[in-house]
Amino acid sequence: MKKVVWISLASFLLGILLAGYVFVYLPEKKAPQRSFLDNPQAPLGSGLYADVPQVKPDLDFVKVSDKVGPAVVKIECDKVERQGIQGFDGGPGDDFWDRFFGNPSSPRQKPPSQKVTVQGTGFFISADGYIITNNHIVENGQKVKVFTVQGDEFQAKIIGTDPRSDVALIKVETKAMAYAELGDSSQVKVGEWVLAIGNPLGMEHTVTAGIVSAKGRQLGLGGEVQTYEDFIQTDAAINRGNSGGPLVNMRGEVIGINSNILTPSGGNIGIGFAIPSNMAKKVVTQLKEKGRVVRGKIGVSVLNGQPVDEDTRKLLNLPSRKGALINSVEAGAPAEKAGLKQYDFVTEVNGQPVENNNDLRMKIADIQPGAIVTLKLIRDGKEKTVSVTVAELEDTRQKATAAGPGSDVGIQVTALTPNIARRYGIRTTTGLLITEVDSSSDAARKGLQPGDIILEVNRQKVATEDEWNAVVGKKKSGDALLLLIRREADGQAQDSIVTIRIP
Image 1 (tube, rainbow, N blue to C red):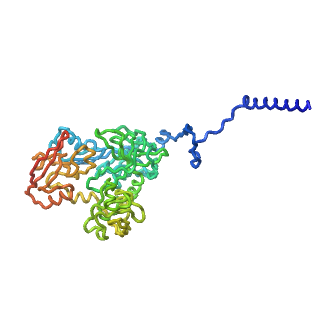
Image 2 (cartoon, rainbow, N blue to C red; image 1 turned 180 degrees about the vertical axis):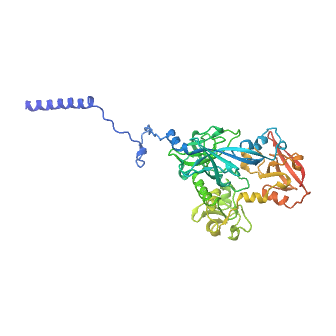
Image 3 (tube, rainbow, N blue to C red; image 1 turned 180 degrees about the horizontal axis):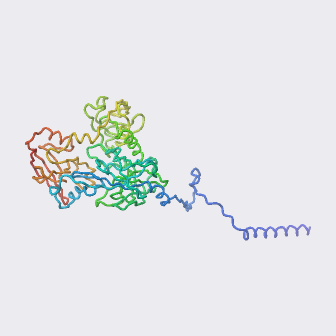
């Protein structure tokens, strides 16, 4: 019996010693750290003080810059521009807004046109020399030069430009250039890191970093001219010269083409805008094949950036705010022929849901002229289906040449929209903004100048270029026009009546 007790006691002591050796002397074997992000299906713990997962995104800016940088080029474009509103990178020709915001120089002391050299950015999208840039950099260019980061210089040919999207395609003669890959901008997430590469203020090949601040921005830059805007907003530093350069994600894919900034000072304040790569792909494909972009239209107008509010939804008996409200139907247009009416609320295009006004415009524009589109809409609280034959949207440049708003009276005008007014701090939100005054015209002699706002012509209110042309077009040489002019300065607005005579 004593022997059994001694054996048990010895075994117990031996077990204690062995356990102590294992826990004290053997090296600690750590369990691998795992985050709940590794298994998104696993439920989160209920502990009050849970461990914060250590997320380490791949932010190798050097790697991305090395990948895309060699494809980025500097662009210089010589052109002759009339005095007036110029593009984002207008350089010396960009004097309208300087005068508008207090520069004492008078437009009548300057010639009506001048030669300028506009600088910007572009990037290769193929090894054989095709380059994407902005329309406002190269449109109407007389000579376009391209400079690569490797030190090469090329003369470029303009393949096509598209003012409605501000995208242009140019080409140089080469066969083995490094090029950038256009990514899928629909996959871009707000908050993800991006790089902007370009030539801001002449500082060649500058890389800046930021995040995607927002998507789907519309700025109303076209005034009365219908533009297609779906901007990616970023806080990556963008300045004059960055236009046309790539906005790149952390995989080295171009997800946007830098185009505009919003600023009260002319410099970067962290609000920049890029054209989505998916839009650029569609435009570039057509520019390469046709030299221009063909878009569809049905002849209805919707307010840009004005979604249906809750009050409107209730008054029109709409089931949802998602859709596009038709403000007017163009006489003789396909929409009128198909029976579409004012106050119709379009909810689907060919079975695809319509999110808002801009979405309707984009969807119709992507449909080729001649095709039949099926629209689902709400009218007086009831659902209807309408088939419309799509027509071709007119080229803005042809329309502008035909109309020539104000050219016969010595002034150029553009529709003043709430977006333009807000952007430049103008209190008046409707009317015609004078952008150019011919120094030899009666308008100049009567004191009109860029920045003045035309409220009425011959006591008729005018808010669009078409309304202006309708009045002026009926007049003959020697006829007089009675204008109600508003001039804003130092936060104050003063109206005056001015009579000018058609030469």
